[in-house]
Image 1: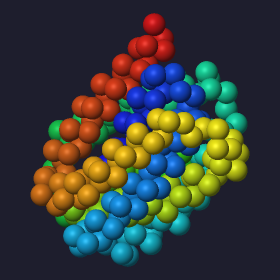
Image 2 (image 1 turned 60 degrees about the vertical axis):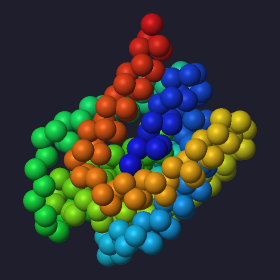
Image 3 (image 1 turned 60 degrees about the horizontal axis):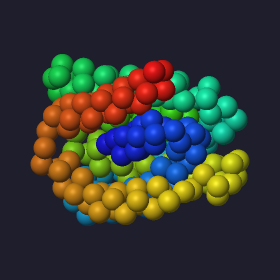
Image 4 (image 1 turned 45 degrees about the vertical axis):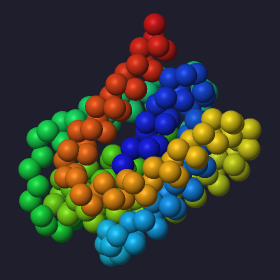
Length: 224
Protein backbone atom coordinates (compact mmCIF):
# COMPACT_ATOMS: atom_id res chain seq x y z
CA UNK A 1 0.00 0.00 0.00
CA UNK A 2 2.96 2.39 0.28
CA UNK A 3 5.83 1.06 -1.82
CA UNK A 4 6.02 4.23 -3.91
CA UNK A 5 5.71 6.66 -1.02
CA UNK A 6 8.33 4.94 1.15
CA UNK A 7 10.78 4.46 -1.74
CA UNK A 8 10.36 8.04 -2.97
CA UNK A 9 10.78 9.41 0.55
CA UNK A 10 14.09 7.59 1.02
CA UNK A 11 15.41 8.60 -2.41
CA UNK A 12 14.44 12.27 -2.07
CA UNK A 13 15.80 12.29 1.49
CA UNK A 14 19.14 11.02 0.17
CA UNK A 15 19.32 13.87 -2.35
CA UNK A 16 17.78 12.40 -5.51
CA UNK A 17 15.80 15.09 -7.43
CA UNK A 18 12.04 14.58 -6.91
CA UNK A 19 11.26 14.11 -10.61
CA UNK A 20 14.06 11.53 -10.98
CA UNK A 21 12.97 9.75 -7.79
CA UNK A 22 9.35 9.57 -8.94
CA UNK A 23 10.37 8.45 -12.43
CA UNK A 24 12.63 5.68 -11.12
CA UNK A 25 10.14 4.46 -8.55
CA UNK A 26 7.29 4.37 -11.06
CA UNK A 27 9.42 2.50 -13.59
CA UNK A 28 10.07 -0.16 -10.96
CA UNK A 29 6.43 -0.14 -9.91
CA UNK A 30 5.44 -1.08 -13.44
CA UNK A 31 6.97 -4.50 -12.67
CA UNK A 32 6.10 -4.77 -8.97
CA UNK A 33 2.47 -3.75 -9.47
CA UNK A 34 2.24 -6.24 -12.33
CA UNK A 35 3.38 -9.02 -9.99
CA UNK A 36 1.12 -7.66 -7.24
CA UNK A 37 -1.87 -7.50 -9.60
CA UNK A 38 -1.39 -11.11 -10.70
CA UNK A 39 -1.13 -12.16 -7.05
CA UNK A 40 -4.29 -10.28 -6.02
CA UNK A 41 -6.25 -11.67 -8.97
CA UNK A 42 -5.05 -15.18 -8.06
CA UNK A 43 -6.19 -14.69 -4.45
CA UNK A 44 -9.58 -13.34 -5.59
CA UNK A 45 -8.98 -9.90 -4.08
CA UNK A 46 -10.25 -7.77 -7.00
CA UNK A 47 -13.64 -6.04 -7.34
CA UNK A 48 -13.77 -5.53 -11.11
CA UNK A 49 -16.57 -2.96 -11.06
CA UNK A 50 -14.57 -0.80 -8.68
CA UNK A 51 -11.44 -1.41 -10.76
CA UNK A 52 -12.93 0.11 -13.92
CA UNK A 53 -14.25 3.11 -11.97
CA UNK A 54 -10.74 3.83 -10.65
CA UNK A 55 -8.35 3.05 -13.47
CA UNK A 56 -9.37 5.60 -16.16
CA UNK A 57 -9.44 8.74 -13.95
CA UNK A 58 -6.34 7.43 -12.16
CA UNK A 59 -4.36 7.25 -15.41
CA UNK A 60 -5.50 10.75 -16.45
CA UNK A 61 -4.45 12.19 -13.09
CA UNK A 62 -1.13 10.35 -13.18
CA UNK A 63 -0.14 11.69 -16.60
CA UNK A 64 -0.98 15.26 -15.52
CA UNK A 65 0.98 14.89 -12.26
CA UNK A 66 4.07 13.52 -14.01
CA UNK A 67 4.03 16.40 -16.48
CA UNK A 68 3.75 18.97 -13.68
CA UNK A 69 6.61 17.46 -11.60
CA UNK A 70 8.86 17.24 -14.68
CA UNK A 71 8.61 21.01 -15.11
CA UNK A 72 9.29 22.06 -11.49
CA UNK A 73 12.82 22.82 -10.24
CA UNK A 74 14.22 20.06 -8.01
CA UNK A 75 15.05 22.30 -5.03
CA UNK A 76 11.58 23.81 -5.14
CA UNK A 77 9.86 20.45 -5.33
CA UNK A 78 11.92 18.60 -2.69
CA UNK A 79 10.50 20.17 0.54
CA UNK A 80 7.00 20.19 -0.93
CA UNK A 81 7.18 16.48 -1.81
CA UNK A 82 8.65 15.52 1.58
CA UNK A 83 6.04 17.58 3.40
CA UNK A 84 3.28 15.94 1.38
CA UNK A 85 4.62 12.45 2.13
CA UNK A 86 4.91 13.25 5.84
CA UNK A 87 1.28 14.41 5.80
CA UNK A 88 0.23 11.13 4.13
CA UNK A 89 2.03 9.15 6.85
CA UNK A 90 0.35 11.09 9.67
CA UNK A 91 -3.01 10.79 7.91
CA UNK A 92 -2.67 7.01 7.71
CA UNK A 93 -1.75 6.84 11.40
CA UNK A 94 -4.86 8.81 12.31
CA UNK A 95 -7.15 6.85 10.00
CA UNK A 96 -5.82 3.52 11.16
CA UNK A 97 -6.19 4.44 14.83
CA UNK A 98 -9.67 6.02 14.63
CA UNK A 99 -11.43 4.19 11.79
CA UNK A 100 -14.29 1.85 12.65
CA UNK A 101 -15.19 -0.09 9.52
CA UNK A 102 -18.84 -0.28 8.47
CA UNK A 103 -19.14 -2.08 5.15
CA UNK A 104 -21.06 -0.34 2.33
CA UNK A 105 -20.67 0.60 -1.33
CA UNK A 106 -18.29 3.57 -1.80
CA UNK A 107 -19.81 6.57 -3.59
CA UNK A 108 -16.88 8.90 -4.31
CA UNK A 109 -14.65 6.85 -6.60
CA UNK A 110 -13.82 8.60 -9.90
CA UNK A 111 -12.76 11.96 -8.32
CA UNK A 112 -10.70 10.01 -5.79
CA UNK A 113 -8.97 8.12 -8.60
CA UNK A 114 -8.18 11.36 -10.45
CA UNK A 115 -6.77 13.05 -7.33
CA UNK A 116 -4.88 9.95 -6.22
CA UNK A 117 -3.28 9.50 -9.63
CA UNK A 118 -2.19 13.14 -9.82
CA UNK A 119 -0.69 13.17 -6.33
CA UNK A 120 0.98 9.80 -6.87
CA UNK A 121 2.97 11.15 -9.82
CA UNK A 122 3.50 14.75 -8.62
CA UNK A 123 4.32 13.73 -5.04
CA UNK A 124 6.41 10.67 -5.85
CA UNK A 125 3.81 8.28 -4.43
CA UNK A 126 0.48 8.17 -2.67
CA UNK A 127 -1.93 6.20 -4.85
CA UNK A 128 -2.22 3.35 -2.35
CA UNK A 129 -2.41 5.42 0.85
CA UNK A 130 -4.79 8.03 -0.57
CA UNK A 131 -7.15 5.80 -2.54
CA UNK A 132 -7.10 2.71 -0.30
CA UNK A 133 -7.65 4.57 2.95
CA UNK A 134 -10.43 6.77 1.57
CA UNK A 135 -12.30 3.85 -0.01
CA UNK A 136 -12.14 1.96 3.29
CA UNK A 137 -13.40 5.00 5.18
CA UNK A 138 -16.37 5.03 2.77
CA UNK A 139 -17.09 1.40 3.68
CA UNK A 140 -15.40 -0.61 0.93
CA UNK A 141 -14.37 -4.10 2.07
CA UNK A 142 -10.63 -3.94 3.00
CA UNK A 143 -9.51 -7.11 1.21
CA UNK A 144 -11.11 -6.12 -2.11
CA UNK A 145 -10.10 -2.48 -1.71
CA UNK A 146 -6.41 -3.30 -1.39
CA UNK A 147 -6.50 -5.86 -4.19
CA UNK A 148 -8.43 -3.62 -6.58
CA UNK A 149 -6.35 -0.49 -5.91
CA UNK A 150 -3.11 -2.44 -6.41
CA UNK A 151 -4.34 -3.98 -9.65
CA UNK A 152 -5.39 -0.58 -11.03
CA UNK A 153 -1.99 0.78 -10.01
CA UNK A 154 -0.24 -1.29 -12.69
CA UNK A 155 -1.93 0.74 -15.44
CA UNK A 156 -1.31 3.95 -13.52
CA UNK A 157 2.43 3.36 -13.12
CA UNK A 158 2.77 2.30 -16.76
CA UNK A 159 1.23 5.61 -17.88
CA UNK A 160 3.28 7.69 -15.43
CA UNK A 161 6.53 6.00 -16.47
CA UNK A 162 5.80 6.66 -20.14
CA UNK A 163 5.14 10.33 -19.36
CA UNK A 164 8.41 10.72 -17.44
CA UNK A 165 10.36 9.06 -20.27
CA UNK A 166 8.75 11.46 -22.74
CA UNK A 167 9.56 14.54 -20.61
CA UNK A 168 12.91 13.88 -18.89
CA UNK A 169 14.24 10.82 -20.74
CA UNK A 170 15.98 7.69 -19.45
CA UNK A 171 18.58 9.65 -17.44
CA UNK A 172 16.39 9.43 -14.33
CA UNK A 173 16.78 5.65 -14.12
CA UNK A 174 19.88 4.93 -12.00
CA UNK A 175 21.40 1.87 -10.31
CA UNK A 176 19.01 2.50 -7.39
CA UNK A 177 16.21 1.55 -9.75
CA UNK A 178 17.63 -1.98 -10.09
CA UNK A 179 17.74 -2.46 -6.32
CA UNK A 180 14.17 -1.25 -5.92
CA UNK A 181 13.08 -3.59 -8.70
CA UNK A 182 14.63 -6.71 -7.12
CA UNK A 183 13.27 -5.99 -3.64
CA UNK A 184 9.84 -4.98 -4.90
CA UNK A 185 9.30 -8.07 -7.03
CA UNK A 186 10.29 -10.34 -4.12
CA UNK A 187 7.97 -8.53 -1.70
CA UNK A 188 4.89 -8.06 -3.93
CA UNK A 189 3.43 -11.60 -3.68
CA UNK A 190 3.96 -11.52 0.10
CA UNK A 191 1.97 -8.30 0.27
CA UNK A 192 -1.00 -9.86 -1.51
CA UNK A 193 -1.02 -12.71 1.01
CA UNK A 194 -0.70 -10.33 3.98
CA UNK A 195 -3.60 -8.21 2.70
CA UNK A 196 -5.76 -11.31 2.81
CA UNK A 197 -4.91 -12.10 6.45
CA UNK A 198 -4.21 -8.88 8.39
CA UNK A 199 -6.80 -6.22 9.25
CA UNK A 200 -6.49 -3.19 6.98
CA UNK A 201 -6.60 -0.68 9.85
CA UNK A 202 -3.51 -2.32 11.36
CA UNK A 203 -1.79 -2.17 7.98
CA UNK A 204 -2.57 1.56 7.74
CA UNK A 205 -0.99 2.18 11.16
CA UNK A 206 2.12 0.16 10.22
CA UNK A 207 2.56 2.02 6.93
CA UNK A 208 1.84 5.35 8.61
CA UNK A 209 4.60 4.81 11.19
CA UNK A 210 7.22 3.91 8.57
CA UNK A 211 6.20 6.70 6.19
CA UNK A 212 6.08 9.38 8.91
CA UNK A 213 9.53 8.45 10.20
CA UNK A 214 11.21 8.26 6.78
CA UNK A 215 9.66 11.43 5.36
CA UNK A 216 10.19 13.35 8.61
CA UNK A 217 13.85 12.33 8.57
CA UNK A 218 14.23 13.44 4.95
CA UNK A 219 12.55 16.80 5.60
CA UNK A 220 14.73 17.41 8.68
CA UNK A 221 17.88 16.67 6.66
CA UNK A 222 16.81 19.09 3.94
CA UNK A 223 15.99 21.90 6.38
CA UNK A 224 18.98 21.33 8.71
